[in-house]
Length: 166
Image 1 (cartoon, rainbow, N blue to C red):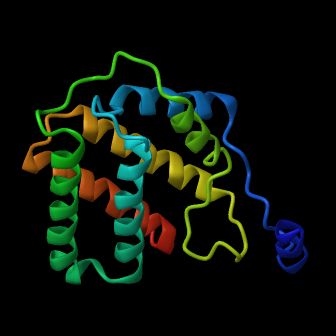
Image 2 (cartoon, one colour):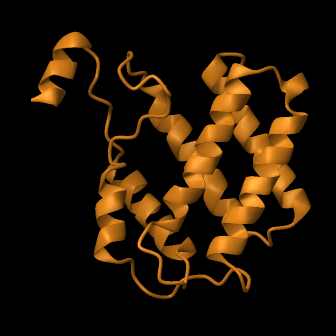
Image 3 (cartoon, rainbow, N blue to C red):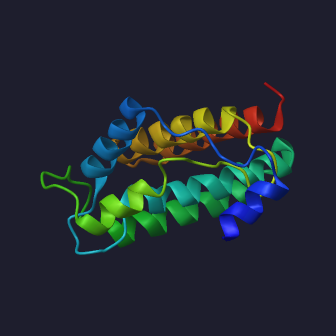
């Protein structure tokens, strides 16, 4: 009922779904980086939320004032790594749990803006895939400080695309 009401208010509400290849790629990425600790949440999607918030902060502010946000971002990334990978990263050899698959299905039609009731732009799917690939490549890297800076740079490029500067 609520979804129908939202569709009446906003005519272009329904986001484009990921292609089959992109969805299976997201599943494969999530399987690769899923932690070996018994958490019920999907590790990749939790890390994507950190990246998403950083993209939104970068989009709203100028890049000159981003030093405090970069420090906060580094701190959140380090907290994430110590929570999910306390003994270092190991590539997952097992499959995902059913709860993780159900959580991934919620992202079949991704939105990458804060304004969920606003107009949907088809480029949001591309921003989501770019952020997903950046998160996956960072988690597979050695988690060095230079890798965090390179990861932040990739997210800042996505934020500039969201802003319309690129």
